[in-house]
Image 1 (cartoon, rainbow, N blue to C red):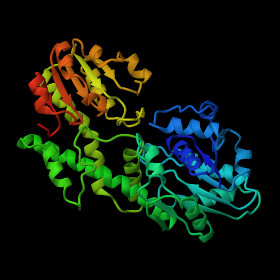
Image 2 (cartoon, rainbow, N blue to C red):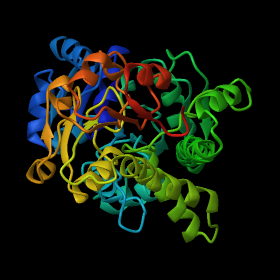
Image 3 (tube, one colour):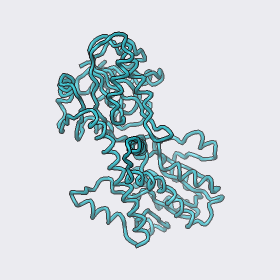
Image 4 (tube, helix red, strand yellow):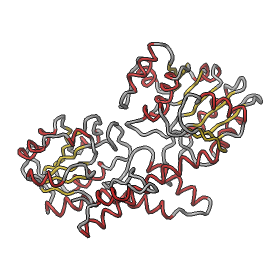
Amino acid sequence: MNILIIGMGYVGTTTGAVFAEWGHRVTGLDIDPAKVDALQNGKLYFYEPGLEELLLKHVKEKNIRFTTDSGEALRGHDLIFICVGTPSRSDGSADLSYIKQAATDIGRHMNRYKIIVTKSTVPVMTTEKVAEWIRQSCPAPVPFDVVSNPEFLREGSALYDSLYPDRVVIGSSSEKASQLMEELYQSVKCPVIFTSPRTAEMIKYASNSFLATKISFMNEVAKLCDQLDVDVTDVARGMGLDPRIGPHFLQAGIGFGGSCFPKDIRALIRTGKEHGQPLSILQKVAEVNETQPQYMADFINQRLTTLNGKKIVVLGIAFKPDTDDLRETRSFPVINHLLQAGAEVYVHDPVAVIPKKYKDRGVTQSQDVIDAASGADGIVICTDWPQYKDLKWRNVHQVMRSPNLFDGRNMLDGAQMREIGFYYQGIGYR
C-alpha cells in the first residue's frame, strides 16, 4: 500500500518506519522543513532506541520519503494517517487545532475516495468532527471514510511496541475501510479488535487512565508504608502475583510524566465534566501525581534542614528511561523546589538536555556523575536509567561532601547503599 503519514513526531515517525518495514511505501508529511530534512537523511531529531537504524535502512531503500508539500502528498495518497499532536489546553481539554488543520487540508485536496485514519489520541466523537471538517473544506462532494486507530506506544520502546503490538484497535463504521485496515495489519500476531469509532477513542483514554491510576494508587500506599515501617516494594511484589492485578505499573515513586498519561487524564476528566459525569477517581489520580515530587522534596528538607547553599545533584531529567522527552517530567518540580530553596543544582542524564531556562537559573548539566557528585550534599534520582543502577556507588560516596541519597524511583538496593555509607531514602521503601 501507499501510505501517507501526517505529522512526523514520535508516533508518526515510528508508525511510518514500521509500515515501511512491513513492505509498504510510505510518505511522511510535516510542515517543519528542519524535521523533514533530518528524516530524509535518515536522522532522528529525537531519541528512540533502534528507530534511527530502521529509518535509515528504509530511506536508503527508498521505501519511505518525507515532504512538506501537502498538496502533492494528499492528492497522491488514498490511505492517510493523522499523527499530529493534541496538547492540553488550560482547561484540560485536548487542543484539536492540529487535527482540524490536517482534516481541512485533506478536504481541500480531496480528489477521489480516501480513507483517513486518526492515530493521534483524541476525545470521543473526534472521528465525527474530522469527517465534518473534511466535508466542509471539500470543493466538491467526494466519498471518503474516517477510521480511528489509536496508538499504544511507550516512549523508549516505541519501535518494539509498533512491530509487536499486544492489540490493534480499529474503530470504523465502513465495511470497505475495515477490510482495508484488516489487510494493512494482516501480518501482526495479536488480537485485532473492530469497534465503533467512539469506542476506539474511549479505549485509548480509558487504558492510559487505568494505568495511571495504578501508579497513583501505589504512591498513596507508599506514603502509608512510610508511616508503618513497611516496604512498599514487597507489597507491590505480593500484589502483582495476583493475576487479577498483575505486576506492571505498581512501582511507587515521584509520579508519572510524559506526553500521554497527564494529558489524557486531564482530557478524560474534562470530557466527564462536559457530559455531566464527574470522574472523581481520576481527579484524585491527577492530584496524587502532582503532589509526589513535593513528597520527595519534604524528605530532602527534613534531612538537610536547609538547602540554601547546598549542592544537590539530580540524576535523570527525562520523564522515563530510554527517551529524551522532557514533557511533564517529574524532575522539574523537584529542581524548582531546590532552586527556590537556594540550592546549587547539578543535573545528569544520559540523553536528555536541560532547557535553557534552567541553565539561566544556574542549573549545571554534567556529562559525568562522579564529576557532578564531587562535593555534593545530596543526590536525587528522578529517572530510573539502568546506568544509575550500575554506577560504582562506592566511588560516588567517596567524592560527596555529605552522602545523602534520595531515590525517587526506588531503583537501588537500600540496604546495600547504607552498607556503603549513604543515608538512603526511597518512597515507601526501606
